[in-house]
Length: 256
Image (tube, rainbow, N blue to C red):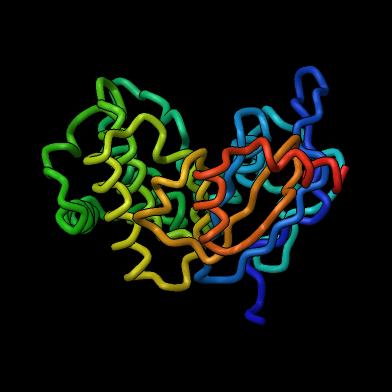
């Protein structure tokens, strides 16, 4: 088996503000280049898992471990995890009025590389990535996510993914709120990036099988009540689409 990129072991996490436990013993392993999907009903802990992996301060890990490239990330700040190669695409990207997409990306890229990126080199690099993703270069002058449609916000996340070149891309419900045309555009961007960087691992968080109709995962995991209760191949997503999540309750009880 290939050396693991991400190993999550017996992960327990709670909301820092009130101590409500959300993750109740999650185990997950990804090797470089793999695509895994995590599905589950609302409140199962899917988005919390993505945020805990990236170091979101709203959550506190109370037990377990997260290893990235063999090293614990639990004492690393979110920006340190990002520089190490972990990328999180948010379900609801934050609006940043007054800061252009170009300036935001140059700042992020400079932080990732540990040195200021030359403005002219950056302009060429940004234009190349936007062209490859079929994005209008005028998009770069708009304020980050300010007044963007749902599809534009998600395409901006894909642009960041393309330029920052992480080793692990965690996509938190990237398909949320997208019509079918926007979904095709976004998934085409992910597939393009993946084809250029085959060693990049992708963790897709999603409610529905429809995104997996465009991106075929190597493994599908089902979360319920803060745990992964079932794992399988791509056919598991189709089974969930047909049966819903009620039949998973037996699996949940079996691991409780």
